Image 1 (cartoon, protein in one colour):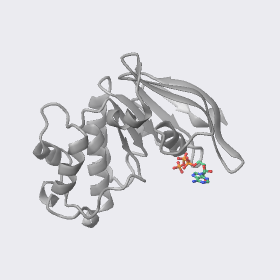
Image 2: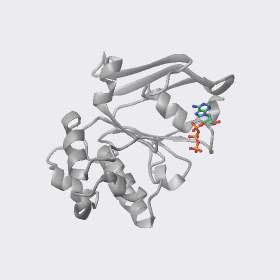
Image 3: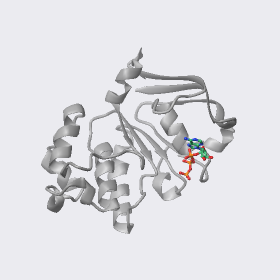
Image 4: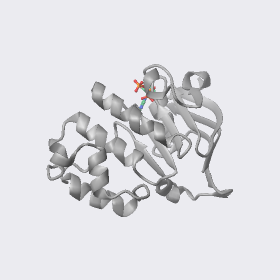
Length: 205
Ligand SMILES: Nc1ncnc2c1ncn2[C@@H]1O[C@H](COP(=O)(O)OP(=O)(O)OP(=O)(O)O)[C@@H](O)[C@H]1O
């Protein structure tokens, strides 16, 4: 998987958040997208995956030299963001049965393995709306960590995690290095200091 970004620009009203952004994201490499609060990290991630439209430029997703049609891009990636809503009415078991109809677990993983990995065994029959914010975040991150998708995008990954949760994040994100195309949007060094490449969003003002 390779993502090519050509002359990308996004503005809200008359203000450019970023402009003339040219870069590429290569298979099995890791990238941090950094910048202060309000610099445009989340906007960039959302524009990259087509969740919000760009005002200028082009984004191409390629697999084995073939362009992936826009409507199929989602089959290749997991995106974990604070604005991603879980289906709160579902219990964990119901949610995972639904989610993994569309996505595939990592090789050799079962739903039970997934539940163990995100430390939610005791809560699998509970509706997600009754989870704490940290439990929801562990579940969301697990969807990126323990899936077979080639691309994992993490926006502010340790939001709502306590010290133990942050240690769990680091323990599980690092094995993805060299195995997935990993893009982490963050302004906290400890969330991304293991990445091979850094993109400062403010360089594209
Ligand atoms: N839907 C929107 N309409 C208008 N302005 C927006 C919208 N979404 C974001 N912005 C503006 O775009 C700028 C970048 O916001 P963004 O959320 O991408 O920053 P960020 O780097 O992710 O910030 P943080 O670190 O605080 O999460 C901000 O000035 C924000 O107010």
